[in-house]
Structure formats: structure tokens, C-alpha cells
Image (cartoon, rainbow, N blue to C red; front, side, top):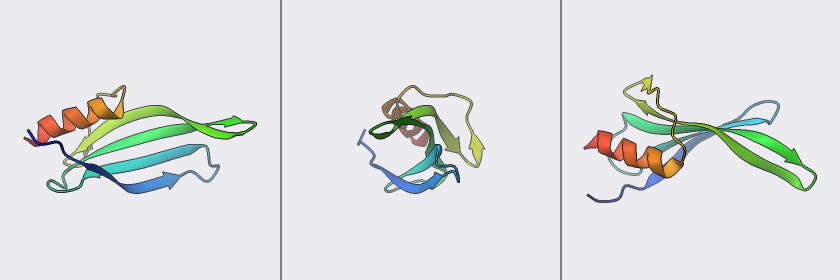
Length: 83
């Protein structure tokens, strides 16, 4: 099975600047599946770091219940769903 490249299509940051949502879609292929990540800002003296709150798969307009630990695990699961 060929590795699929995921590309960030949308990135939204809340008005307060503390929540960032990113939507990733496969570079080629199905448009019906995407991966959404939600991150929360941790303010430090030297700047900001982002803590991942959730990584979920969107398929055919619905959000699947599973919250993945890493982006790589979500990619692998989404790729299995595409085949």
C-alpha cells in the first residue's frame, strides 16, 4: 500500500488566540475524508507552545468518535478507511 501525503487545507485560530483548528486532506484521492486537529495554546515567557486536545477523522460529513493519540495513528486509520 502506497503512503498517502496529507496536506493542511484549513487553519483557523480563535479570536482569543488560544485554540487552533487544522484540517488535513489527502493530496490526491478522496475528498470525503479528512483529519481535524484541535490544539490549545500554552503561554510561556518565551512565547507559545501548542498542546493537542484532539485528533479526529471526518468521513462523509460526520465526525468519527475515536480520538487518536498521534497524527500518524489517525493517518493510518484514515488510509485504511479509504481502501
